[in-house]
Image (cartoon, rainbow, N blue to C red; front, side, top):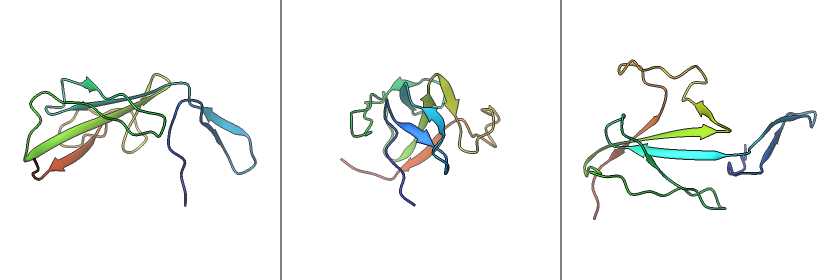
Length: 98
């Protein structure tokens, strides 16, 4: 499967060609603690960048996505604040770097 980058103006259609969703706004935020979020602006090619205060190396970085003012989750369900089953953000492990 090939998926287009999620950018403002993208129109998602179903198999019959009916519009399912028009992307009016895309917001990506990052965090190193899961509670303080920093905006990560996205360019026209859907690449988002940001400088996260206190970025760990090594450690974890959390990223969440909001489209048209709605939070999107890892499983399509409502965001779950339970730290044992977080679905409100994706978790990335930073292993090192310079």
